[in-house]
Amino acid sequence: MTNFDETRERAILVGIDRPGSPWPVDSSLEELARLVDTAGADVVATTTQRLNAPNPRTFVGSGKAEEIAELCRAHAADLVVFDDELTPSQQSNLERTVDRDVKVIDRTALILDIFALHATTREGRLQVRLAQNEYLYPRLRGMWAHLASNRMGGGVGSRFGEGESQLEVDRRMVRKRITSIKRELAQIEKVRGLQRESRYKSGTFKIALAGYTNAGKSSLINRLTNADVLAYDKLFATLDSTTRKLKLPEGREVTITDTVGFIRKLPTSLVESFKSTLDEINGADLILHVVDGSSEELGYQIDTVEEILGQINAERIERIEVLNKKDLIESDIALARLERTHPNAVIVSAETGEGIDELIERIAKVAASRDDYIDVVVPYSRGDLVALAHKRCHIVLEEHEEGGTHLAMYAPPDCVHMFDESRF
Image (cartoon, rainbow, N blue to C red; front, side, top):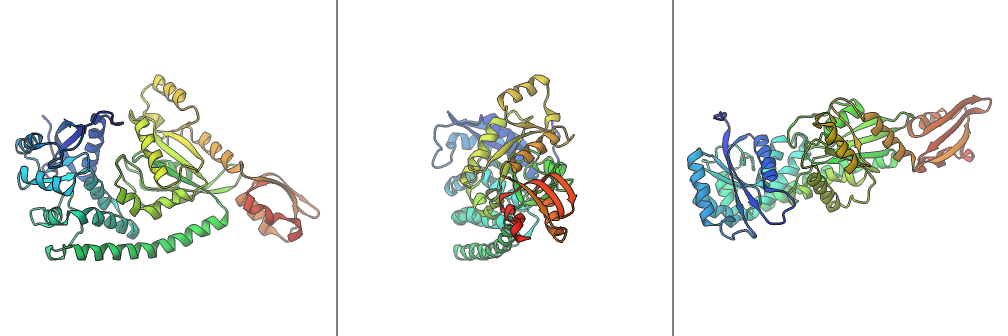
């Protein structure tokens, strides 16, 4: 018999089996269970319903809704989580069917709740608050009052508008709140934009990590740059973008930016709210698409990431597919299958470091592919240019001659004019 932590909420999951769905319902529910665990609840039961189209009143039909209510009573559940987004009326009807002390939320509300739990920076918290308010706005008549009521009492799905009283919850106040948050985010985006523009003007080669949540992006940036980015085996452990420097073997410095992980059915409101963070991907010269190579769902996860990259218009950017967690791949047969089905990918383990050298070589090759070859003698009075060459270029020859430092190197296009001898 499974022992559950009495301090955690008890959740029942509801999955929908739709013909032709790209994700099997079982794997989708497994992921939903991980989300619930990340949010701080235990799954005590799951149930599924095969549907061609949602029921307009209860999503699953009245019979299934009653069955869910019985499950809640049998398992003393506090929470029902639907794997698909519910309309405000569907949610309200379901809440009337189950016991009054049971919360009914959907996947979107759950993800928003997790983001609220993990947002640490001011920008991250504002982005989450914006997404929450935009999600809740159409639900004010029923759901908001439900979430704000005293019986809510905290827990999963309750981290919405912390500290707000019942009197504040009306459409005018929510619109005002959304406007205020957008104004604050716009100010932060100005600062971020200036920082981003400064990096762009520097001409430094920029790399962005993108991938499904928990693919190991933070662990990978730690391994590549000897950084100390937070890395947990949890969904959405990090939300805020982090930029670190990486020095390639030839001496050139590049930047690597870690960004928020993606997930199937990622709420559109979150994609919009995190636009400034996701712009770090759009401004990159190279994307490392990090994939959990040990996952049985890696094909679906790859498709999800590619779909979201398309939504933010980043599909045009060159990328390297990085299959991470090689140390967790169960057999040589499974590894050989990956090598056969993903011939252009680099298979690595951020945990052990295996394959990292090959990945760095691939990064260096892409960075160098845009360079121009220069052979120049830099006067000794221009030591700043020699320092620039070491930082930004791939030096293949450096000799000290009578007239100055002889450099043969590959330089980024924006750097070439700096070494025009007419400027010395």
